[in-house]
Image 1 (cartoon, rainbow, N blue to C red):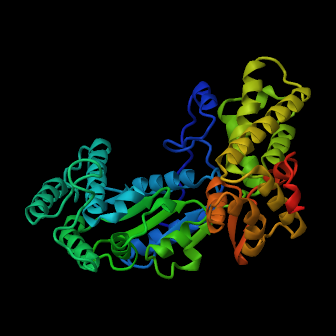
Image 2 (spheres, one colour; image 1 turned 90 degrees about the horizontal axis):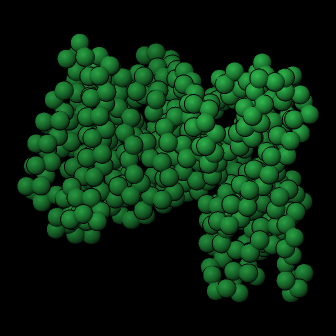
Length: 438
C-alpha cells in the first residue's frame, strides 16, 4: 500500500480574469483556481483513502465542518479531483456526490452511487479510449437490471416530488428501516465489485433526522455490506452533532475537522498565486508589500482572501501597463475593508435575533479570551428570544448557521467568533440593549 495514494491535485487552471472578477460571491461551482493550504485537513482525507485502498472499510467516516466562507466546498472539490486523478480503467475510483436529503432512502443513495460510477466510466472512456476493458463497463446494464428487480419487488426509486415519495418502503412497519437498508446494500454490492467509492455529502447539516436516515448512515459509516466505500461529510459548524443525532456513532476524533483560519504563509501563497497567474507581479512597484498587507487584512479567512484579492486585481487591471505605485495600495485596502464589511452585513441579515444581541456576544467573547460557553450564550439571548416567544435553544443553531459562531474542539463544547474582524465589526455596532437589560 502506498503511504500517500492521493497526493494533492495540482492547482486548477486560472479562469479568465473577467470571469474570476465577476465571480465574487464564491459560489464554488467546480474547483477554485487558487485553492491553497489546508494540508492538515487534506491529510485526514488522504489517510482515509489509504485505508480504503487497503480494503479497510467501516467506521472511517470523515466530517469537515466550519462557518460559511471557511472553504468547505473548495476542500471537497479538491478531494473529489484527487479521487478522479487516481482512477484508472483497471482500478476505478468513484467520487460520488450525494444530496443530504437523499440519505433518507437506501435505494436513492444506491442510485446516486451507480450514476456517479457511470459518469466515471464515461470519463475514463474519453481520456483512455484505447482501453476498453474497464471494470465499470458492465455496471450500466447490471444497475438497470437491479433497479428493475427492485421495482418488481415494490421498492421505489422515485425522486422526491416526482411520483412516489423518495425511496418509499413497501409495506414496512416501524423499526424495519435497518433491515430494508441492509437488503438494498446487499443487493447492490455486486454492482461495485472492484470499485472504490468515496461518497461526498455537502451541506451535511441539512441531513434529515429520522429512523430511515439512521439506517442508511449506519451502512455508509459502519456496515457497508460488501461495498468498498468511505463517506466524507462537509457542513456548517454543528454538522458533527447533527450526524450523531442521525446515528453516526462515535465518529473518530482524528477524522472530525474544524475548518478555521489559514496560516499567514498559506494566505500569502494564495494571494501570490493570483498575482502570478494574471502576470500582475511585474506591474507592482513592490509586490511583496501588497501581498503582506492583503494577507493581514484577510486574516486567513478564505472568503476574505478572495474578496481582498478581487479588490486588488480590479485596481491592478485598471492601471495595467503603468508602474503601479504603492500609494494605490491604500485605495485597495479601503476597498477590501468595505468588501469585508459588506460580508459581515450579509451575515447579520442572516441572523434571527436583533443586532445588539450579537454585539453583546462579541463583548463577552473579548472579556473571555475569545471563548464563550453555552450558559453565557443563552443568557445573552434569553431576553430577546423569550420576548418574541421563540425557543432560546434555537438561538445557538441559528448563530452557527449564520456564521457568527463556531464550536471549538479544544476545549469541546465551547464557542468562538470565527474571524477576529467579525468580532470587531459586531462590537462596533451602534445598537444597544434595551434599558431593562442594562
